[in-house]
Length: 303
Image (cartoon, rainbow, N blue to C red; front, side, top):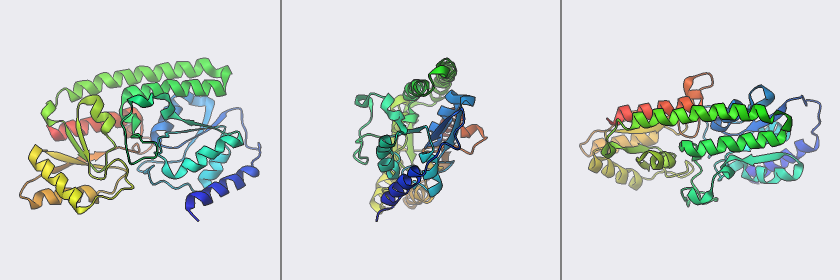
């Protein structure tokens, strides 16, 4: 039996025993990725109890729910997840929860699908890494404000005020990021990473983005993939390539070795945060801090 089927059965077994004994006056919110957790915290503030399923360095593509996670989901008033099959192994659970009076919200529903980047690697047929376009994240922010306001209408003014404050921070982030990126000549804006999480970033900031493993970390890079990308790096005179916090470092190290075997050199420019934020309590543990860190790391390495 597939694990996802076991998790689904476990969920409904726990749900059938669910009680209101742990209910408080606050809305019980469960989130999946660290980016979504950070966003919902900014909007919900002290008005919600929030539990994020995934922590720093966790790959949502491969994430498998534990029994504890299923308990959290079963006791939630509302669940926010990315959608577009980012959380591939949780999709079946989310799709069936609506019948159990638990509100599930895919934040990607905030975005016009006609503007998304297509992808054959996901059942949704779209690249799910939407948080790397700040304009999209602004749309998601307003969407979350609306959903929380629907859940707790009496607090809609507070949710709106929190959302407006966060939107102002995102606008300032775009200004700062653009200034930093504009210091890097366009011919040097080639971003080579472990997997293609940065396509929306590339589209927004005019980077050519190449990922060794493709869009999903569930796909493995073969020898031909490594050799082909090594030739690309040499041809384009790329200074640096990047590892990702949620992807094993060995893939990029193999690429670096392949380039060196051809008599050329490329440095590892640093570790980027792609599918997860940094450690909680650090600057990189927030969406805004992560974005600034990534951009500074990229620009400094490629100059």
